Image 1 (cartoon, rainbow, N blue to C red):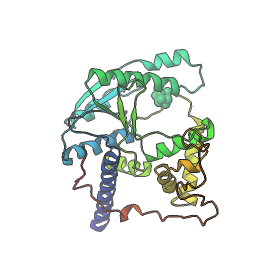
Image 2: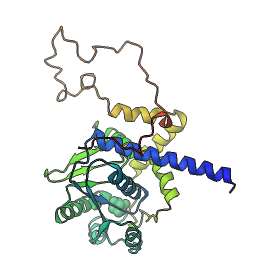
Image 3: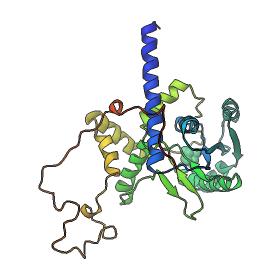
Image 4: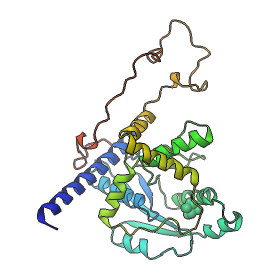
Length: 302
Ligand code: SF4
C-alpha cells in the first residue's frame, strides 16, 4: 500500500472513531446514562456491537469529568462450538475486570422449543434473568448493552408491523421490578459505522448463529426494507430516527397520551392543524459536518 493510500485510510478510520465516540458521548449525556460513582456492567457477547460498546465506554471513562467503574460480563450459554477461550484471551489484554458466567440455557431452550421453531424469545428471557441476577451479585448500578440506532429503528417497525404499537427499544430503561437500569450508549451510532470500526479493530468476533436457531424472518424482512430505503432514499432512515426523538402526541391517535375528548375550542395545541400546510422537510445534517468533539469530552455527565 502506498503512503498516500495508507494515510487516507488512517484519516478515515480516525474520523470514524471520532464520530462513534462523539455519538456515544452525546447519547450518554442526552439520556443521563452515566452518573458519578456508577459501576457499569458491560455485556460482551463477542459480536461487533458489544466489542465497540466496550471500546467506547473505556474511552469515555478516560476523558469524562466524572468517575465511574466498568466491568465486563459474558454469558457462556453452552452453545455447541462456543469458543470459550476467545473472550478471556481478549479481555486479558484489556486491563478490565471481567466475569464469564456459565449457564446452560442452550439445553433448556432446545428441550422446551420444538425443532425448527425460533428459540430467541425464551433464550432472551432466560438470558435477561441471568444478567439481572449477575448485576446484583456484582454490585452493578447499570447494565450496558450494545444495541445501536438501527436496532432501535428496526424494533420500531417490527412493533408497528406485527404488534400494532408505536414503540421501539429505549436508550435507557428500568427493569420490570424497578431494580435494574439498562442503558444503550450506542443508541446514536449507525450499524454500518460499527461494522466498519469492528473490522478495523480486528475484534475476535464470535459468530451469533452457534445455537442453530431459525432466523427471525420478520426482523430479516424489516432490515432488508430499511436497507433498500437507505439505497433508494438517502436520508430517510436518519429522518425516521429524528422522528423518534420528535413526537407530537396531539397529532397521533392515542387517547391515553393526549386528551382529545376534552380538547376545547379556543385552545391551539402544538401549532394547531397544519395538515394542509406545505410539509416542512428539514435537511439532514451530514455526519461529518457535525463538530467532532469526542477527543475533548466536556459534557457534564452528572
Ligand atoms: S440467536 Fe440463539 S443465542 Fe441468540 S437469542 Fe436466539 S436462540 Fe438465543
